[in-house]
Image 1: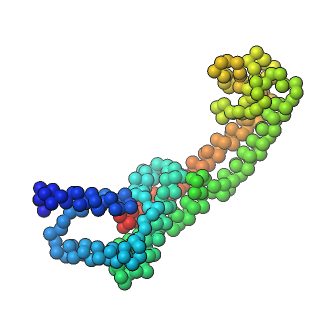
Image 2 (image 1 turned 45 degrees about the vertical axis):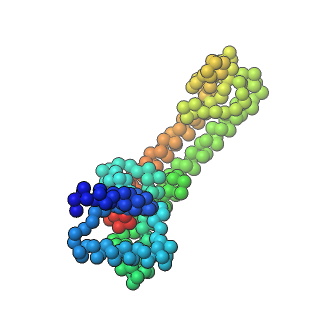
Image 3 (image 1 turned 90 degrees about the vertical axis):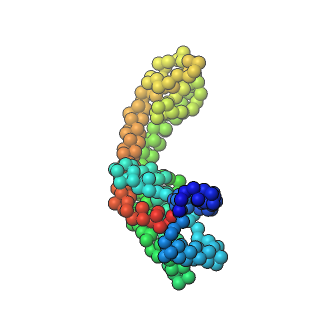
Amino acid sequence: MDQKHLHTLEFPEILAHLARHASFSAGERLSLALEPSPILAEVQQRLQETKEARYLLDSQGGLSLGGAHDVRPLVETARRGGLLSPNDLLDIQSTLRAARRVQRTLERLHGQAPRLADMAARIEPCDGLSAAIDGAINEQGEVLDHASEKLARVRREMRTAQERLMDKLNRIIANPRNAPYLQEALLTQRGGRYVIPIKAEFKGRIPGIVHDTSGSGATLFIEPLSAIEMGNRWRELQLEEAKEIERILGELADHVARLADELAWTVEALA
């Protein structure tokens, strides 16, 4: 049909109204791309799909796609060898869960909605990927200790190293001989290192490395020499943890890349 006639009929406005009812961004884009068909068989198919959709709305309260995301850009990133963040992976997992829920519902209603059930049959649940994400990342987007044996070990050692460091620094602060030199009896961090705030005029009374100064210059933030080795060990373990997390996320991204086609089919079926 000529585009001028479609505009005369306000067809784009109708599509925009339809798209506002789409709960899934990929479905919204398909709504906006709809065009009338001159092919009778295609028109009849669309009418049948619409009839089935109305049945679902009337008898089932609709079919929720809650939790689904258009993850195709994330999949493409993984396919190109890029890393995915924990939240990216949670979006993929949420989409797979929504897809599996839709598929099961339409399998059960195949007799009443056969065309929509056939669409849902194209969904690939990717249960192995979903389980891998579930076993590595919690709902807050944090990589779990048990995501790998190495990560669990490194984090245990990190906690021990931090406890020893804090104990050492707290003993320095609690020492009555150091009380006159302290601006405040507390620990803080500068550049990822634990430091003690001392009065600038007492520089050197507690030997250490100056990591920062206050805006007024009255306070120096020092890392006591006696705690530097412990601080170094804690920092080394932090870097080791970050490296292991990156490796775990890389493995999950590789898993996504291997299932790129299946994930694309699933998004398209949901749309």
